[in-house]
Length: 368
Ligand SMILES: [Zn+2]
Image (cartoon, rainbow, N blue to C red):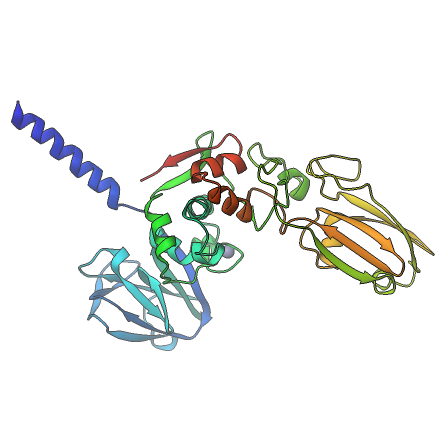
């Protein structure tokens, strides 16, 4: 009986251990269109023919090589660790360090360099770029889950380029090796956790600061999503921002046919109050500007772009020869507010409560 019990415990332990070490590998595009690339490895590695798997050569710890398009005889090579797990290898690509291995492929007449990054290590190079590592741990955990969910949901977004995600703002900024204890702790303590809605990975949009209420995604990009709806902030946030433009400058942005600005028609902002010209959070849907020659209707985003406004949650006033925008928040307002997450964490909320607040009716799921 005791033996059977021990066997069961042993089996459970080894299963748990396996569950604790496996993780997806994300193919991150690092360079493309280059003729050569220099590589260096932190541990003994093998270089293989990526198509066939055959070992081409061994590379010692600290060893390096230059891959040159002109001298490359096969279509793609991969450099993988010989002894240590992939997560414990670091590869230097043109002087910059990354987690995991590397794939170099011929694409037309140049090379594409792809980092084969274990997801949990990849996050170390992402989260510290998306949120300040000085933010409270629970806010960093919420950001980590947003980044992990994004990576898995959008895996294969660059399939036509031969990789999963790029390393820029189009996907998520990934800087490679980064060392922040706070970020590492946030990643370790949420290992494998993602956000799902009806068992499907969600779009984890986020922005810098909601200004008091987040925005319904349908009011920003046109397609409503049940979990990306406007939610009011429970903690009242930051002081308003102001942007001032002279009336002359303002008018000149709308061409000679507009003339001089005479008045602006926009209902007064109350956060969370919908109006004909405002969304459910109070953001500007549209406003009319009356010129001496013509009247124009602009969307909130038109104003935001033209006058580099931090958000579309604003009032406009024509004051003498000045136009004054007064508003709240920064960013599009969809999904999690990072400043909000910070303040809730400071107030004692854990990451689960923060995520449940910003992504309605979603659930956390541990994938591995
Ligand atoms: Zn991308």
